[in-house]
Structure formats: structure tokens, C-alpha cells
Image (tube, rainbow, N blue to C red; front, side, top):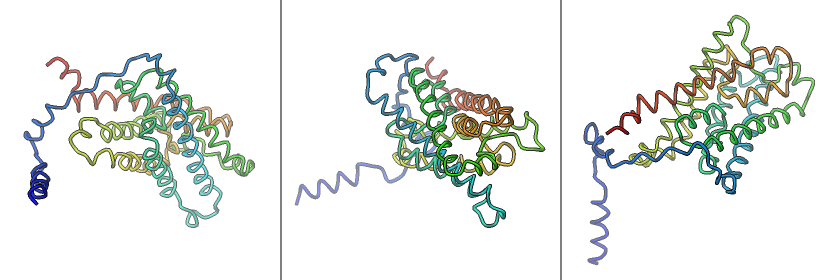
Length: 287
């Protein structure tokens, strides 16, 4: 009986009833130690099965991502009436929902990047080595090509007639408009990724790792709602490359550079903003 009462007492007093806020919360964060940056080159990774397993996970995730999303785009494009389909909102939900599901499934294996821009941003923040970043990007692009290829295999003529889900700058917008939309859209996504996966927040708030895929998927959804009318929404160079290669028409390649340059600039800006302004990591190293 005494042992039981002791357990209850320990359980009741293990955590405080109120979460500290303001300066009290900041004082707790002082015990947090910033993890060391990932090495630029890590040859030992090439001998590890976990390295290749992570690459395979990125390939499969990006394959599934392109398969579901491009198939959704084709369904909307082939309908005579937008009211009889899921419409733009449904396309946005397909992209955001798949990112939510796939990040949840692969985060513990590869980090759930599924996007070269995300990988690039995390590399700039020294969250992974150059070796792993390049491997991820290659596997993401291969997965995207295969995913779009399967969709084309269902009905080639219809796929080619309806644009194949390839990203282009739509009529009424300039290339500068398209580039700006891709930069800002990718900034929103990668900034959300940094915030949702921040190790410091994970250490302080136990619910953050569980909820991380939700804001990331929701960010993808919102960006698609805003920019589908402008560029069809890239914010993912692998997604744009896979659709462009399988569709393979001149007008799809004319604007293709926008869907690499824009996302990489947006990812770099998000990495700089989060690491320098929000986390102030360069300044902490001096203290």
C-alpha cells in the first residue's frame, strides 16, 4: 500500500501542472544543446544499409506522390465540367494530403523529404551531408519520373492531350511572376519544415514530432490553392522534372528552369531565415 501511494505521489509530482511561458520557458531552453552540424562528406555512409534504405524510401515516397497527384490532375483535366470533379481544391488536397501521409510514413527512415528543395534547404542548414543530399535528390527524381510514367501508361493519348500535369507559366503571367510564385511558395513550405522539425521544439514540446507531418502537408495544400492558377504549382523540382520528362513537349521545357531555380532560392532563403533570424545559431556559437 505504501509503495502504491509512493508511485502515485511520484506520478503526480513528476511534471508541473502549468507549462512555463515567457522568460520561464526560455530559461528551460538553456539546457538544450545544439546538435553538431553534419559533415560535408561522410564516406562511411556509403557502407551503411540505412543510407540506401533511406534513398529507397525517398524513391518510393516520391513515386507514390507523383502517381496520386498527377492522376488527380488528369481526372480534373479530362472532365467537361469542373463541378463534376474535385476541382482545384481537390488537386490541392491531393498534393497536401499525400505529403502529410508520406512524411508521416517515411520521416523515421529518411526524414521524409520527398522534395529536392527541402533536401537542399536542410543541407544548407547542415542537417545532412552532401553525400546524402545528392543521393536523396537523385532518388526523388527517379521516383517522380516513374510515378508520372505509370500515369501516362494508363491512357497515353489522353495524358498527352491534357498536358501531363507538367508545370508551365500560365497565360496572363510572366516568367518573373512564375519565378516569384515558386520562390515564395517554396519558402512557405521549407520554413514550415524547419519549424515543424526543430529539434529544440521537439525537446521542449513532446507533441511536436507527432504533429510535424500535419503543418507540412497543410502548407503544401495552401500554396497549391494560391499558385495553381500561376504555374500549376511546382515547389518541388522532382515533381516538375518527372512530369516534364514523361510529357516531353517543348513548351513544358521552355519554363522548366523556373521550377528548379525558384524552389532552390526559396529553400535557401527559408534556411537562412530560420537558422540566422529565428534560431540565431551563428550568434549562439560565440557565447
